[in-house]
Image (cartoon, rainbow, N blue to C red; front, side, top):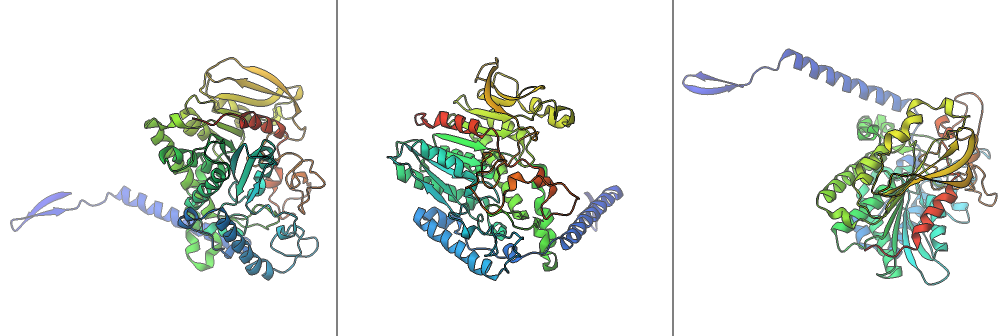
Length: 499
């Protein structure tokens, strides 16, 4: 700005914007408009929105969840599922016998027809007096189905297992369009209140989180350090935790801008695909990615604040299982944002390495081949690490390479397992499912039938012939090392409560 004098008065004159700056602003605006136009065009040429995309069930709000108890939540859940049955399933034409649609009442994947609908919240109680309680939190677009195997493990060890259906899940994909991450956290608090009510103040309390549920588990544990009214967990178990998301999720909200115009409503969705999975959404709204990003951003900020204030000293032990290759969450963030800041409190990190047998080693990309060495900090570390990997290039046998907290020496232990010959790595979604899982397993239990066996699909043909995304078909959906996961979790179930 410059000052000039006119008739004795001092006037301020704003300097003109330089030509290069004006040109840069114009080019940026043109680029944004072009991107939004392409996004709108892409949305219009995709699959149309169906009733299960546009119907939004009425879930309890954050305030209502904080006032509710477990029976009240189950009653509200029943109303939500009834509304889906009335507004979606009853108005959806039954598919042809060979078509799969979870929202058609005659479909073999209609969850209402199963002996147990695992979209619902559930409680597993031990045969004797409880030895403790565990709260299990599922992932984004997921349902309590993903926690049923771990819930059974805890019940076998005398724990009451409470798996809550997080708001917006287990109903219709449209349910995720009107949900905030604060609603998920309020549901977590409700489940923990119920767990503590069932076992009293002195017995152990664990929180288990898968993917987005892992972020909620850590967030709750941090909140309990700051708020004495919240019951503190004695142990946190994480599977593929969403401590950080990929860079794309940060800008996912921009993809929905064209949806402000009704003609481009599909732009509010990152993917619109047929719904053939009875316990997980295939379609994914932009708001789902936005809320996960907001949650992980707040989580990372809170970790930094609590570390600076010295409050992380009260953090319970954290046990994490993570695939070295994970397309959904940021593996480096697991170290940088969480484990590198944890105190020496008995925490442990298990990493599932790629299959380094001679069959796959020559085909691994450089990024995949070197991922482990790039993300794992040098020893000594304040937590135990365990690498589950091939015994050698000529062997499919699997070993655990463990380094104790504070140590540098590695200990090798054969696990009596083999890397399946056709599998080059685990994935984000594989960790909580055994290969016998009826829906996702490589070798599903015949008695565990949910109308489709996604884990056994190994189709060969021409591109574009199936309703499934080919990348999704290639993704490993179960964990051949699941017995090892159970072993590591069980090793800490009997630990005394964290002080």
